[in-house]
Length: 79
Image 1 (cartoon, rainbow, N blue to C red):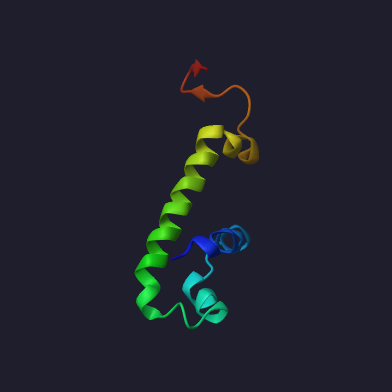
Image 2 (image 1 turned 30 degrees about the horizontal axis):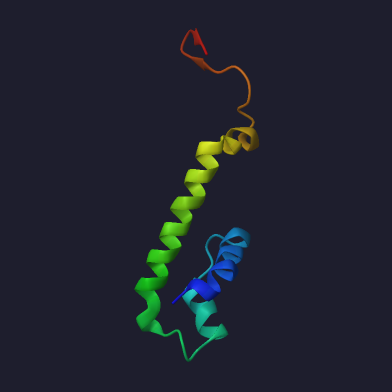
């Protein structure tokens, strides 16, 4: 149901993480999306957000953006 819109939805979420996806989809295609589509959209957005978070965490890019690159300390232990 959402496959043709996936790229557009991901762009919306990238630009504005708190965007109301269903409202935008309803505006884009009111004959296809209604309030009954809410749960489907919620599940897809949740899965995409988890996928994005995993990619950010696993590739370590979040540490570079947060300025945590280099030696870290845990108490008195250098890693």
